[in-house]
Length: 568
Image (cartoon, rainbow, N blue to C red):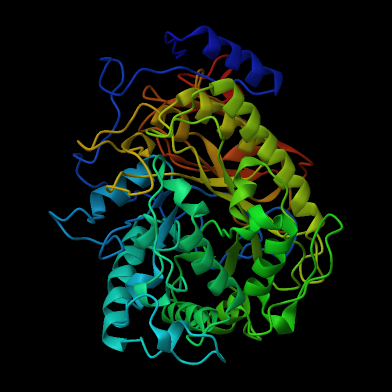
């Protein structure tokens, strides 16, 4: 069924732009509930248990090259959402009636939309709130780094217990978790969150709140000093060492959990040295934070050799994570400016199972809602950012990942504009990269707006779900050559070169809860459908002699001869 919605001239220009990229997925949709033809599921629906086994389960690896792999050696793709609570208790878990509640209804709705990963926020301030104030001389005075004595095992265990409950709840709906150590503008003192008060060292400089958007606090003098002390680890409190120790304890706590996809060590790394000294200066500090002094890599684009701050830990946060949970993925981010397509010098790190962690946002956005003020400018910037990061990924090859690290977009969107999301998701399909949309719900985010959420305050989905809930391959038994989905027409195509040594099927998620209300037709060339009728998990087994398999899904009945397709 072809959906036609009214739109502006700018939206029509956007359709032309997306079509020029070889996709057919741009659309303009009204807000959910404004049209009787839009009947999307909501949090008010009863949780629906999975009707099939998980398409993908177990530990996922990144041996090198752009893809992630499961234990059957299938290429796997993840679509999902970010879910971060930025107020006490700084985590989401089942707590009926509380604003930080994340329930079975949330997990069920995510699964029905086809989301198989959640980037779940946690904070250092939640794990180790401590008791010392900001600028405590015992922590913030210059001197050799040592234990700040702020750790409380009971507090940590209670926080981890809630986190584990959420991870296991999502796992029951076959949803993986990326644990994200979230921060924005370091601490509440700077209108952000993330770092405990005791780890804020500003040399006594008072924070001054600049007028305007929250992100302007990044450029304040006090925030700059606090970030500097963290990245150089030059105070007595051993800020980096203690941060790494907390990550090691977290990784050890989740070591055996089959639904942890990996760890995101530090959200959107920032330093005012990006402004004062340039990207290469800070990216060297950032890479030292990731690797530690004993595992230094190199930078990209002709930047000078890395010289780590003398007081940085010998083993950085990534070796610490991998020592406590061997084989787990680590999603390392470039500096915050990279989200807009600016250069990053973060380079090769000779460590296993790294995933180049990309954020994609445009600059032409409302300071209040975050929505684009110029949709076409935002589309161009987002697509440019993805192109730049794809090239960077190739240059980050190391001995452990000779094809470069895998990559994943852990944040994009933050917008209720469907045109922007249509263009971004079409481009990510073309690049064959997985993603997590920011954000699932609006939890009174001090550094965001309600327009960013996929689920509205009343539990209904925004109509942008028509773009984000899409057919895509969750597992490919071979080498994916291309895939694309057009939410205007509900047509999905996948072409891959089969690996006949893989016994597990190729699995395509088909969003029957949002699209394909009257069924769908799956046509397969070079293989056959093996899943049951009506399933949103389309299983395809390749023929023994096939050199290429093509899967095409269309809404409604199969046309032509009975053997030409299968109506499911």
